[in-house]
Length: 492
Image 1 (tube, rainbow, N blue to C red):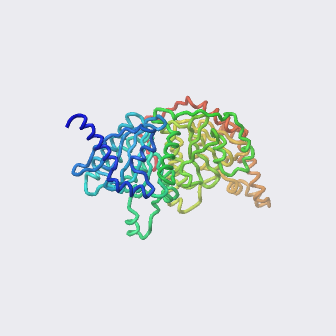
Image 2: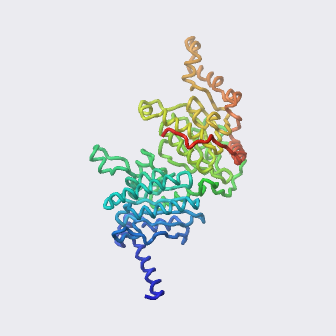
Image 3: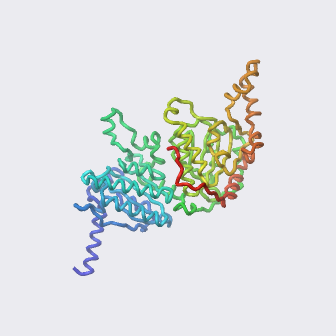
């Protein structure tokens, strides 16, 4: 065979590989409303930018097209990223020895090049027929995923089943996006759980987003999941040594936020976040999970900022864990954190205490205390008790604490504070409402906190965008160092 014939043979082999486990299986996959493994990659990356690595890799004892996972690199908005896409048409997308080597290779390359990793998951688990080799394969992938945590962003998109070790790998990534129709995340199969316990676990998209918090975003189909990944990536740097990309904005940094002057009429702290953001755009994360707290990304003067907003509802353990995880992510990737605070305590519940509320709260204070990125806290209403201390307070390491004139700060909320301090007045006939108002105007006055340095400045609410933007600009050159140690022992 001459060189020309060999080139033709190569092209034919590549064309055959594009059909994965076969044209019929791909057609069946598409009838379910799904894209194929390669179609997902092409939809994610810039046109014609994908370069495949390991296309001809196959299992040792049988021909398996690309061994069930398509791997390589390309660009998104001209930015280098590495991808792997499980092919459910090849042995159900099940993971094996060579498959794992391919995934580990692109993860290793991403770490060396300082580029994000996006995993596209659609698999029925591991290849049981490979025995211990399959077990080893999963171990290699989990170790590789752990090795890039805090080095390069890692995004997982769950298009179909994400079972066993794959579900654990996805949960180890920074963000998980799940397909509303077909996505499922589970360690133990739903049928196994039902047979064992008589209950059906909520492993679908709704359960993964609302109940377990395993997923951060849900898309209605493959295309919308991919769109969410692109949008998310636009807020993130490529690695831990670079800054997030800056975008031009026509939004005036001194734009007045007039609606905020009547803060008493605003019940949702996310409104404050949006008013501060460029073009009032707030990209919320895990919006349906533990929604007494809100986290997400905004841009201020074109730069990415992590936002945490609490709107007065008592915090649960899930909420503080959600905040802690997000703050730690921002700190990994040099993204400043803005906290909009309205908090007066934790949910009073036996279940919360039994589940380990104190341990979850310890995670939150650890996250803020160890974070070295710029941290700005804006107290808009209440800042009562231990909850306020944990939530980016001056004592927890906030660089700048701003407050509205109507804000309140004290060790106890008015109800408890009146009982402790005004017992005599209450016994003498003063009404509880009257005493609580007195407590708010005196003991809980934000001016008292400012006198003691717990608040750096009391600002006009309509100037919030200008003041936060100025604070973040001032803090851009912040440098901080920590005591030398191998690592902390954060409660998990």
